Length: 104
Image (cartoon, rainbow, N blue to C red; front, side, top):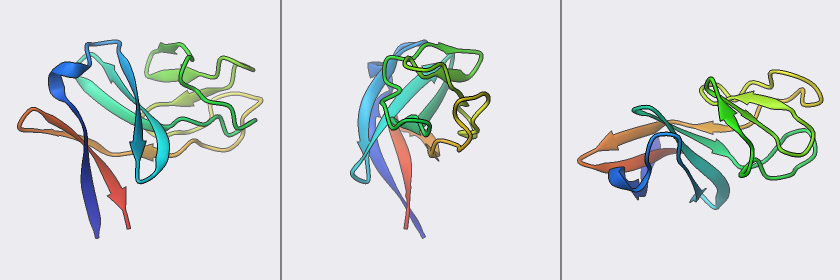
């Protein structure tokens, strides 16, 4: 059974914005692209560095250190040097609140 954790208010994040959050004690990023929200673990699977300052384009985030790219929807590693996916979390907006799913 999963649980949902409130991480932000809907108005806190503008389109193109990002916010560092904690999801079940895991550092993560909440990103907004248009009206869609994504939450990913803030960790490049190539070298363990944060993705927080990486550019976001076309629903992908690029690691600022070595250029590995990850799909925001699936977490899939899209290019070398990363070969492992980054963890993603389901996001819902309910009553003006942004919620992220925590799996048991």
